[in-house]
Amino acid sequence: MPDITSLKQRVLGLVRANGPVLPVQVSKEVGSNTLFVGAMFSELISNKQIKISHAKVGGSPLYYVDGQESKLEKLYEYLPGKEKEAYTLLKKYRILIDTNQEASIRVALRNLKDFAMPVENDGVLFWRWYLISEQDALFLIDGLKPKLKIEPKKEEVAPIIELKKVEKVLKPKTVKSDEFLDQVKTFLSDKNVKILNETILRKSSDIEMKVKIPSNFGDLDFFLKAKNKKRIGDNDLILAHHKGQKNKMPTLFLSNGSLTKKAEKYVNDNLKGFLIFRNIEE
Image (cartoon, rainbow, N blue to C red; front, side):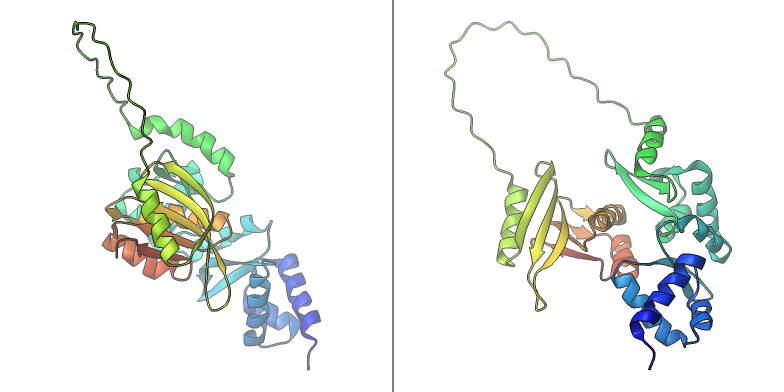
C-alpha cells in the first residue's frame, strides 16, 4: 500500500516544478492511476495548496500553484471562438467596460473565469486582465470613465422669493430608520443567522455583512450581499460572488426583488455551491 502522505507531497512537488499540469501527466510520473491522483488533487485543493483552472484541455482542467498564473495562457488554443475573441480584447486593453461590449463578448467574459476578473467601480462593472493587480486596474478605470458618457446632474436653482420674517418653532429632529436594513435583520433573525459585522454601502439600498449560518455540520461563515432592487441581474451576482471569493467565503445574496431569467440561468450554470439567492419577502 502506497504511503499516502509521501505520495501527496510528490504530487505537490510535481505541480510546483512543472505546473500547470494535467492529471495524466502526474499519474505517469508517480506510477499511479488518474483516479487515485485525482483524489490527491482534491485534497490539495481543499487545503489551498494548489489551484485548478476553469478552462479544460480535452475535458480535463489544469492544476497549478501560486506564481504559475501566467502559464495558464496555454489554455487559449482550447477556448471556444467567442471566448478567444474576448481573451484577445481583454489582454490587449487590460480593462473592458462591460456595458460597452457586444452581447456575445459580455457572455464570453463571464465564461472566461481564468482570465477575466470582475471589478466594480461606482456601480459600474469592469473586467480586468487577470495578470494586472486591482490597484493597477483602478488606475486604468479612472482613464476609461470619460467613455462611459455619464452626464453630471444639473443643479436646480430655486427661484428667489421674498418672504416675510416668521419666527420658526424648531422641532426636534427624528432619525429615520433604515427599513430595508430592518427587513434584512428580521429575515436573518428568523433563520437564527448571527451577524458578525455589517457595512451600509447605500442606505436603504445596498448592504454587506459577514454572517454565521447554523447547519447540521456546525456554523458556516458566509459573505452576505443585500440589495433593495426589484430585478437582480447577473452583474449583481457576479460582483457579489467575486467579493465573497475575496473574503474566502460562499455568498448569500438577499433581496426583496427577483432574479432576471438571465441571472437565474447564470446561478444554475456557474454559481451552484458558491452563491445562494433568497427573496426576503417570501
